[in-house]
Amino acid sequence: MAIRIPFPMEEPPQVELLTLPLTELALSLHTVVDPKRPVRFAPFARRVRGRLPKAVSRELDDLSFLLGPPAPAPFAFPVRAEPIADALARVAPGDEDVQWTFSMHLDHPMPEHEGHEDVIDELKRDPAATAERFITLLCDYWTHAFSYEWPSVEAKLALARVDAELTLARAGVGGLLGSTTKRARLTREGIQVTPTIPAEIDVALQEDNTLPIVLSLFSAPWVITRIAPAAGLVLPAPDADGRVAAPSLELVQELDAIADATRLTLLRLVADRPRSTRELSELLSLSEAGVSKHLKRLAEAGLVLGERRGYYVMYRLIPGRALAASHALLDFLRLATDSPRG
Image (cartoon, rainbow, N blue to C red; front, top):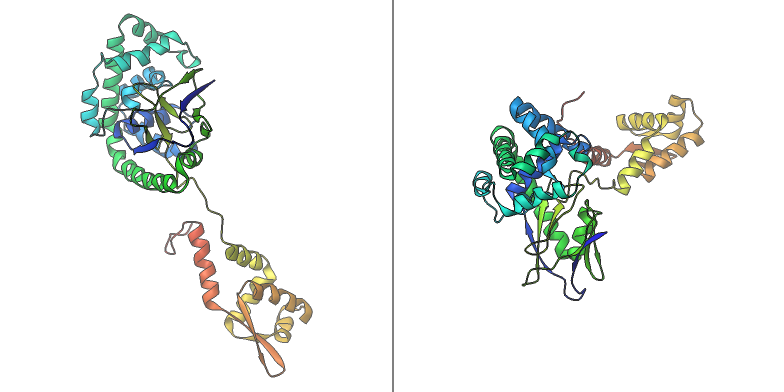
């Protein structure tokens, strides 16, 4: 089963990258109601839950299955990017797209419906009333909780959009898909999306051969596909916080060199003043050959330097390299040098 957006490989679509406030409002609610969402959303969910009045929390629990999948189209793909309060006011309970999405829950019973039989019955009797409850829920969620989170979310989306634009310029739409999700991929026939609800359908691009792609911090692990009036996608935004770059080779070598109590002690001794292997062997009760072996590891990592002075080779610490290694470790751990301890 697949949703396909066909186009020839030699004529890929022009991607229109979007970030839409109303999309984030609706999709962020999934992180509040679904305990299986990625752990990085947990602090956000706790903050939001703590701000919601009990009545709104109860309504969210009752209507949570209507969040999707399938996601209500006016919230996943708003008509325009505009302030959330204005966008919410624009969605009417009788909106055809809202009613069509809600009808999918009646046509395709899902496990998520268990425990929501009263709402399903209301949806059968009076779909407009259910839609009005849903819209009111989103308004209350914005007022009591998401409005406080939005400035931070908006800033992260701006960074994610820059990241996505760079990926598009470097690797095209296939590179963007590969960097954001495993549920959509570029094939020789176009884009193929693995649907959450069983579907086998081809969706055409817009007449001008553009493909709107909405980036969302909260859509993972799903890819939401718009099928009317033309193809569109909601993709998980590139997550800079979720990607960990490999440490540099130099940092690995330095840490490996000092991952030994004897070599750390040697560093401390030669940091005090230059010392010969003979003096160091006496201080550590080791053979000169053993000390030389340890000093060689430290020298290969660039932490100490041996300089001949007459008969002896005197070893000293290279302070700049030791400091650079310390700062490189802090940078890799994303800690500031003045971060509190403990």
